[in-house]
Image 1: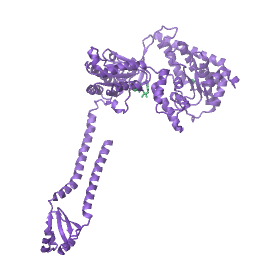
Image 2 (image 1 turned 60 degrees about the vertical axis):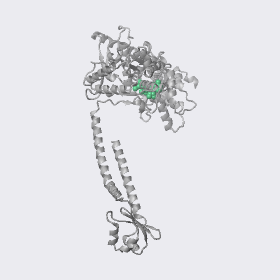
Image 3 (image 1 turned 60 degrees about the horizontal axis):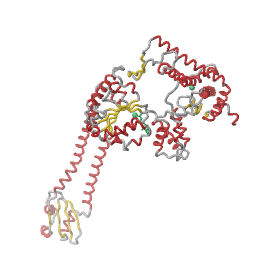
Image 4 (image 1 turned 180 degrees about the horizontal axis):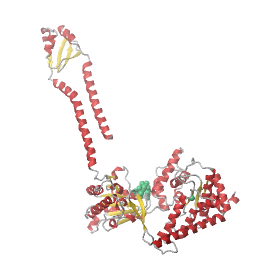
Length: 610
Ligand code: ADP
Ligand code: MG
Ligand code: ZN
């Protein structure tokens, strides 16, 4: 539609300027030193005319004093006839040389033609154009089976290469191989090696899967076709499959190239799982992908890269040799990688001297590449909003909490009673976390509302952790329950505050028993497996692979763990009640306690230092 208006506007402008030019030209001709017919007649009779030149409808007269005059006559009418009609004496006229220029009365026709023809042309063109537009819309409707793929390497002006991807050393090494396949396929074919067709990138969201795929294409200098799995799942059955066909056709034409299927789990889910209409559609789409990949010849230099964060739900047929048999696993970045990623994202952002990205990296375990990018962006926005010229370390550190918990909501008003409950609640979390030996250190306690939380206790590991031990699990459950425990003992009843805590407690306790085999009273195996069903939205369905009796045992075990952890929390809170009261007092006063001050408070050293 935008195009349509643009085109109309352009046509109109051209037309208008043509009109203007003609008007100007005609005016020009008419205005300068024109002479009236009777004046001319008089001048001819007085022998004041040197010669006359007739050029179509315009008559150019040179007088005896060499001045030039001009007159218009009707085209087609002979000049002599005109003169005689106005009473020129034949003898006088005979003395004036009259020169008739080549009959340019054609030009009058040209002008007439243009004056009539142009608008006509404009109207016809407009109609033609409109009909084309309608056809275009029609044909768009007819081709929605065509994939809406874009060769994104051309779209994103800037070329991304492996240099733009920080960290993930191993993954990058693996993909350099793919770059070589794309660049020098003959080298491999000569040795009888089959070039892999499919590469599956596995990793949590935001870890740079899309980025890496783009970088491969950029590094190899080949086109990059991007399509998202969810785009395949459309309303009409059969569309997905035809899109796949079309996509592969386009890609083969552009070979060597990369097809990137983002979120392949949206189509590549185990066939036969799930209910509802979309499931047939997925199955057909998936089948078509498999058929296309099987149809690649040894010389088809197209590599399909798919990304997912749920490799567990993928159909095994996708993972067979000759399909997505290469895997590239991308993990959340470790501290060094975070440092590298931060450095990349810090480019183009002016920073104060005091900024220490290494320290930022140490404060952000569990952050993905996307989170880190977001963090620096938030810091830049914050600095800009406060009219600073450079980003300071404080801006970045403050943004960590914003990224983690949402923006501060200082305007949310709490009654004194609510504030007191929140202070006790958060102080309890923090104190229990501080006392128990296997929990992460407390970075910050606050009763300022953030996101949906009334207050928060920020714990963060010192180092990156890849595993959690059994004792860490139990202690984490105890920390989560501390809020509930203190509300009950301090106020005699519990508020709705701890509902979020309780949800995570259930999750942790169930995982403890059912996934990790950490319970002493049950055989160390996994119980049940989760399956997502796509049926009127997403639903998690747990498939039971154990008996009713075991189910009961699991419930008992979960309750036991939760109760033990609750006792643990309660005992700590009772034993350290004076310290707790001190923390609450400071919290109500200052609203936020930072790590070092909190450690002093909790260790009871605060009196000496002051
Ligand atoms: P995914 O596809 O895994 O969800 P993306 O590739 O879309 O993640 O990453 C989102 C953004 O996060 C990227 O555009 C990039 O800015 C940033 N990012 C993620 N990982 C890295 C990395 N290793 N190096 C640099 N930037 C990264
Ligand atoms: Mg992605
Ligand atoms: Zn809580």
